[in-house]
View (cartoon, rainbow, N blue to C red):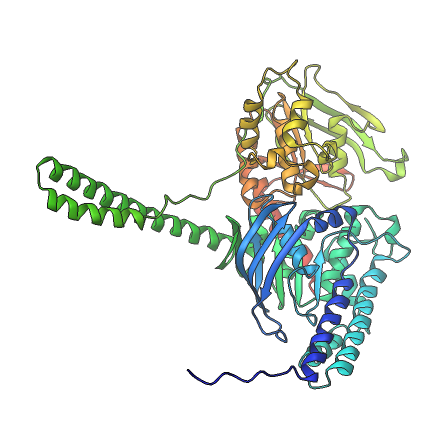
Length: 595
């Protein structure tokens, strides 16, 4: 036997380093902005384990043995995740698979992220305050600078000036120098849609809607340019103009970006890598979303060939054994039987193909002869004052053969126009007439507010459509919910514990039961996963009635709209080219706000 290695006592320096690390982790964990009640509720039910496999003083990170549960539901099991500087990762996976929880686990340091690495997690809007948008953006980096200076002082005191983290922090402090910051902050805010003609960036955040405060929060993240930028559906509150600007901005991000998005266009324009959360594991692919789709398709073809050859070999061996037994050649049959058993033991399971999990159709109640919904000299303002009109003297019509996408900058009145169609708002002047037999389905950005969070999807839909009115058994309802991506576990989980994407799927499940002549869809892709958008597009395309769509998803517009109506200058006019030409126009316009 060799000599037993001597037992070494931990040096004072190492002990101090360990203590400093623990303290810094606590400080950095508290640096993340306060969590909403909903995020706190999910965080309290999330259990995460993982090991930091990369060097603790490095800027690239690798986590091994990463597992995660939420409310006892196993989302990730013993997987590896690696995030490197200079890479932009698109995180994809089914609604409810755990994507948002991964971002939260990193930002809240449930995973052992080194304390010197700065993180911004876009998860909620900026708090309403007396600060203007510009002041809020600059104040964020001032606050971070103060925290970093405190961190640096702690390291100097506990470990000494030779600690490598001191250099990283010094570089970061140079980046965050607030002197001369205002012009850059204003350019970022302008790129995200803040303009004097709409919502000025010098307006106090307390006077902004939640959507505009979310833009302020996004501007904070982009302005700070953290080492790890974590964005969860950053385009959800943006118009098409701001989406184009954000794509361009993030495509040049030089640090580490981890983004969740339902937009294929966005993922293709921005990402250098794609991380697929599937079967409770993370797999990283080089390239954007289109490259990922090609790579997975190639893998599936190869796996199918291996499986088919294996099955053919097994069938051939089974035939040989059976024939030789029948012919009395026992020894030969016995020999091949052993080979057969070995092949069967080593056989791979039939490969599962990547499939859409949203597969449904909207009910239809027949076509109505025009005019179905004409606008006659419609003018509108929320105050009722003529000088504040969003629209003036609109003359247009929506019929059962209409396939219209409404586009235009935020604040121009797209959602307002849809509300005038639905009857939620009434014109200040003029009339909106509706066919006496018209039935409209209406999805809007707050549709999930109708859900009862303490009920399960199965119980909720049976409450809305009781057995006395809808003769469907529980098994029929269960089968129905599977078309919207629910399994036996999720359809009996409290709605409050479902992801936002799963809540949107449930809203569509409720909508798709009733028959409609016209669908009004205001940002229907928000929170859906990237594959579910294809399922929604298929459902819209197969619907025979009229459709009015508001969306920031260029691909969805291209798939389902035959007309594009531009809302601007208190009017609505038809765009004569396709959505790709419109995107090029926006890209040219937004180029002036490049940072």
